[in-house]
Image (cartoon, rainbow, N blue to C red; front, side, top):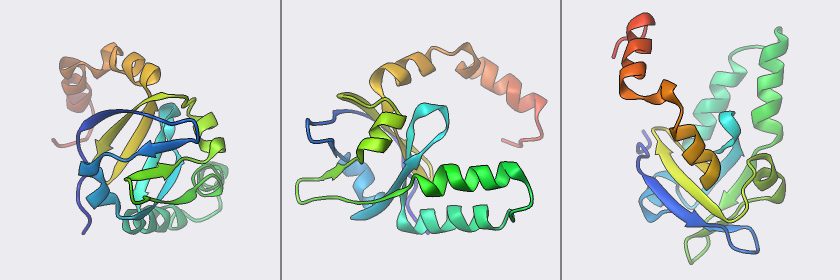
Length: 148
């Protein structure tokens, strides 16, 4: 079982498109991992083990429904194998930086089985969403079938 990722880390992408992966996330990700576009205009980082778990779930959905085929394409066609260099950096492919509007300042967050990379501006804007207040989240949980 892989380690859970957590925390919020502010970093910069250098001129060559490299990002220092926060040391607290490196252990959970491993020296080689997968980056793919995520929802809400960020990138997802999966350890190889978690990527295999994720793609197994995707593949288990079949191919009959258009939404499933599109989800598979969204995640798998745009995924990139990445590795951490001796200085703790990884190169984020240009097409993925473009998809998430990553330029210089970014925020890397741990989100359980994966990490996420956000542009600093997008992360700060997302955090202002009133739907993310603790009271609103609790209300949404109470209205759903999610037992927390």
